[in-house]
Length: 252
Image (cartoon, helix red, strand yellow):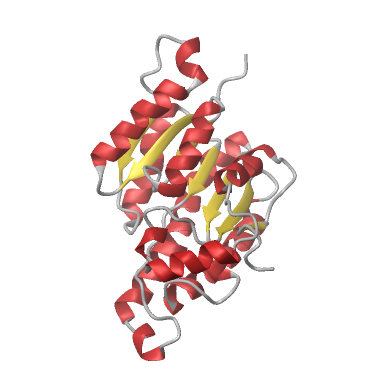
């Protein structure tokens, strides 16, 4: 019998990370999710994943099928340790969903409001460098399984928009990084990116109500099934270097 796939999802305890974790669990994928601050939310999700997974019904020993680990994705050493701990617990790694991001709301149309150096440093560290460090740490293990590395970018990386100029620019850089990694990691590892439009998760609800309503009105489909696209990238063995825009038709 083929052993279950093993996935690592960073920033996996809420929002898109949690939605993807639930979808993966329902498909019998073992998971490590990382969190930074809210440990209780992460542990509650681990319990939920255990309950909804077909692996639980198939085995009486499911203790290590779903695990939450604390990590600061702004710290390169902690990212490397996260991968080491994942291998120690799970024994292998097939899927990395690099979902960490950093955001601070600014008026993107006001240059004076977009020259804060801390914003730029944090955006580059979290939205670009953290994905590079995670790929570097995970690559030897993904080589072994001929796995997949998927990052969460944003529609703001394709069209100048969103929470700030620093966020938009670094999401564009992240998309370009993923294409570069796809070149480097081939032929064994696939590297792809999802770029959602505004999602009304904890992140999206930071925007003013009028911006949330504007996003709803611009959507042609009134839904964003981003987790389904992540799973599609897992299953698609001949797709790499692709940035999938999941915006419900906003960019039309």
